[in-house]
Length: 372
Image 1 (tube, one colour):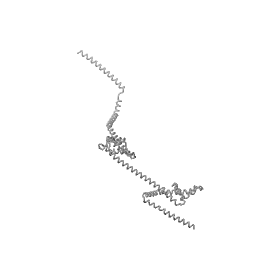
Image 2: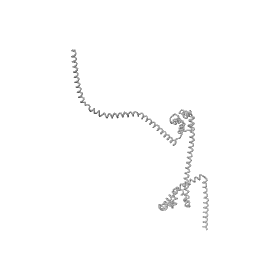
Image 3: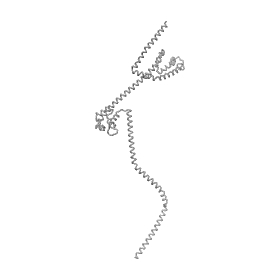
Image 4: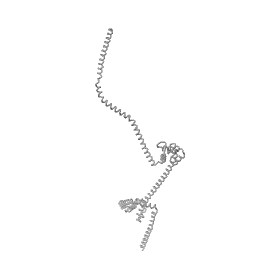
């Protein structure tokens, strides 16, 4: 009788347990809020997407844990590596690897920082809770944490983008206001209303305290910068600046130094260098042409002289053999001396003969004179 009564009590207890579990299922109604509240619904979708992305990672982890669990069960749990010992700690370790399932749970504890090891006595009483706790840990510690990190990061990025947009809007408003102020300043500086501002008009504008105050208030420039501003803006050094040069110069100087400004400066310098290179090359080409024109006439004369020299050289080459022949036919120095001696003797004889003839003639003349 007592045995039957105890069985009835256990049956009633199990029935009450089933009813209690059924009541707990009413908690599932809370998930209706997920469809009602849109942020919760979006979060649930994110969690499901995260779980889908983690599916193959979990499969690979389970395969890894299963393979290592078989190895640990054979080596540790069955005493292949660790011999039988009365040490209670060693026995506890062998119990942790007594089967493949317990080995997988132990290895999962190493992955989860031993978070579920506190519930080992509970799992020994109710083993069906062990996989539920494992699934809950994966869901809460990995999936929810990943989604939470992603949501926080996304919100931070969205906030940063919003702040950046607000900064850009404020900067655009400031630039538009500066543009209006600069237009007014240019009109006030252009006294003769000819569309350009000369140095005298610009210096006259700087003498007005109100205009200087308006410039320094709406821009980041100082008074000393304003004094040197005209030389900075007047790129062509023509002594006047147009409205475009005035606006672009003010914007360029007023902008803070950024990577974009450096890129613009680089592009501008590259353009200026190209213009300078073309200008210098054209000037050099003009100079070379002038030098060629200047040197062309003397070069032609030099070429003519060179041609005459070559023709003279050819003619001299032809005359040289004749000259050498004639020079070789001339008498030597000894022969010349002999010829000179012979000529001098003949000349002396001739002179003596002439002197005799002259004396003879004088005698005849004297003789004819008395006879007459």
